[in-house]
Image (cartoon, rainbow, N blue to C red; front, side, top):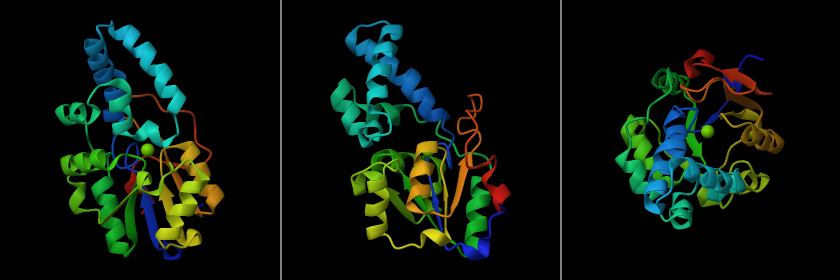
Length: 216
Ligand SMILES: [Mg+2]
C-alpha cells in the first residue's frame, strides 16, 4: 500500500540501519571491539570473538544489548571511547538528507526513535551532521525498555503524544516493527539492506525501502 501522506502527522525514524549505515556497528562489534577485548585479555581474536558472541547473544533485543555502559562494565573495555576513536565508518544511508528535507516540506513532525545509548546518538548525529536536521531524539533507555518490547510502546506513548493511526515508523529490525505493529502503529516500513557491506538479510514481512527518499 502506498503511503498516504495526508493521513500521517508523525514520522518516527530509527537510527542505526535506517538513517545510518549499519556497517559502522557491524564493523565495531565484530572487529574493533573483539580486537581490543583480545588485546586486553591476551586472547587470540578468534577466541575473543567466540566468547563475545555468546555474551552478545544472551542479551539480544534487551536494553543492555544497546547499552555502552553495560558492555564497558561487563567486558572491562571502555566501549564509548573505543567508538570515539573509530568513528570513520559512521555514515548516512543514501537519500537521507533528501528524505528529511522532503518531510519538512510536507510539514510532518519527525523524530529519531532509537535503542542506541544517548552518548552514541550524540557522537553519530554530530559526525553525520544530522543534529541540525533532527529536533527530537527519543532513546528507549529513557523509557526503561527496548523498542522490541510492548512495555516500551506503552511508556513511550504515555509521555509522547501521537496518534498511532496517523504515524509512520521506519526501522530495520523485524522484532521492533512487530512490537510497533502490536501497539497499533498503522504505517510501518522496513529497510531492505541496512548494512551496505553485507548481503541483504531475509525479506521482511513489512514493506521494504531501499532509498528513504523513494517513499516521498
Ligand atoms: Mg536499527
